[in-house]
Length: 104
Image 1: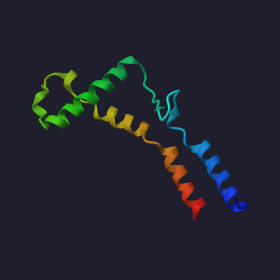
Image 2 (image 1 turned 180 degrees about the vertical axis):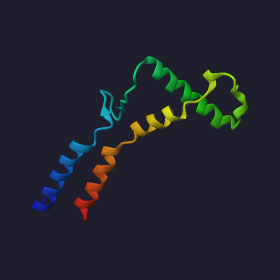
Image 3 (image 1 turned 180 degrees about the horizontal axis):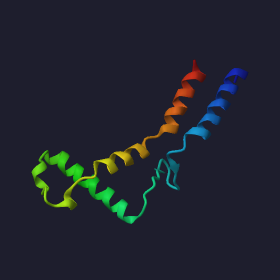
């Protein structure tokens, strides 16, 4: 390998170690975990039920399945979007920007 290629490879390895932080490898091959924070079990439960309700609505395309009078049927869209935002791999996006600079 040429010296320039070796330097580039080392730089990419350093960037990978610094920025590929969202997915954590597990003991199983080709398997990863991801973590996000919740305040307590109630918030986790609300998040899971809201995600399920959102999926049901998307599949049925029928808002009338959930009673407007039943507060437990309301979907906390803000919580769902906040969770999706936490799941978005910003470190990896930053890494890809640096990779673009390295390979140019």
